[in-house]
Image (cartoon, rainbow, N blue to C red; front, side, top):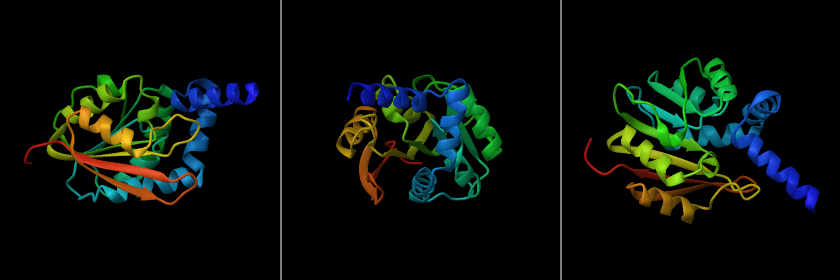
Length: 195
């Protein structure tokens, strides 16, 4: 039991902040595991993207969702704190990917219409601060999709995500569920105001 817990902690740490060779292996798994690809494409579908939408993905990992977004709009930017994932995401999505923490996003030249975070908020040191940073990068009325598939205690259930989004000043949360094992939840919310 002790060894199993130690391995689980190592996996959560490795997938949460991929570095070096083990980080590249984690990125390969993230990019090729069918449930990860399905979850990312589902999240992108929920955002109902339009060709002119500007989209930000925070914690983009190896770029699976970025690639799906890029097929619908050319106006997409990814952010990840792992240099290994930044390199993988740039290669996969052929789009702009920046290295930064969720709670310290760079300044962008224009606000975004949509944002997403797929299975990453549970790895952030301060989820509410990261969500506030995304809030500030969105235009008034902009939408965020926060996806969580609880595995190994690293991710929150939909009630926790709703509380985090509300604490970060998002409004009108709506929960969607994808029937995978374990089930995936997506909480969509918006920045208050009119576009």
